Amino acid sequence: MTTRNFKLASYIFCAPALFIGAPALAEEKDSEAVAPPAIYTDLVACKSIADADQRLACYDARVTALETAQASNEVIIADREQVREARRSVFGLTLPRIKLFDGNSEKGDNVDEIEATITSVSKSRNGKWFFKLEDGALWQQTEARPSKTPPKEGDTVVIKRGALGSFLAKLNGGRSFKVIRIVN
Image (cartoon, rainbow, N blue to C red; front, side, top):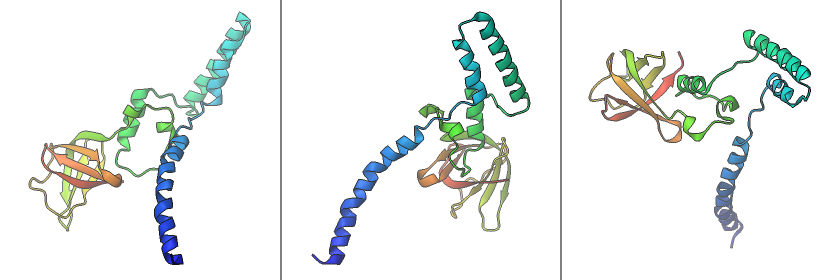
């Protein structure tokens, strides 16, 4: 076996090993949870104080500190619905992974599809459509082939995640076409 053939054979046999180990590494990296802020852990620590008067004083001090931090936006308190809405608002944008959004979340919380109403439409010189949704998100058609039914104000559009980071839009249940979100 020549050196060139040996290298090729080693690549062929070693590459699958890399792909087999990759999901485990990704899972390990994703399992790192976001640590709660110190102001919260200090508040929770109060419950371990045995003396009732000291425990109450601890709670009073920590709750006051938490209220102050929340009022000055040092700490943001959000429920699950607010996090879902934040995820929906950035749907389609290419962002770095933010542990805040996926640290301890359940698998079902990810936004893989949105349905919205188109509020405005325009067409570029090359025949591709731009449309703005009710939430202010701006999307552009990326495929060159024209749509049988062009988008218009008031249409319902469903945008889904596609393969390899792409997005597919479907107007009023029609044929889907590729789109990209434009930062506006």
